[in-house]
Image 1 (cartoon, rainbow, N blue to C red):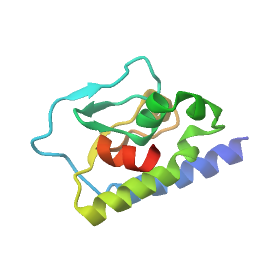
Image 2 (image 1 turned 180 degrees about the vertical axis):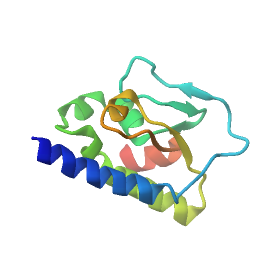
Image 3 (image 1 turned 60 degrees about the vertical axis):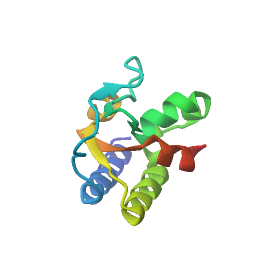
Image 4 (image 1 turned 45 degrees about the vertical axis):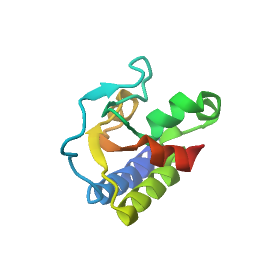
Length: 122
């Protein structure tokens, strides 16, 4: 179990490092507000933005709950959003990670415009 955790943590660290080059702080974006402060997958995000895990947990909770590992389970969606944002010159915002991710050492994650998340996830 510990080896599996370490392997996942290594992969997530690589992903986080790669994604840091996608965006930055969003100038002129509204105040950060949590979309559902009761969810362990929620982050404080600017208005009109959400994280992949936060959006997925909020909009498709039954599917999200069936995932054995939501971080790994949404990884492809995060890659897609990052690539699309880069290709389309869409602003990506770095936000504080939700509590569930902080527990495994992930401190910040990307937040994307909700329209981009809807395009991928719905």
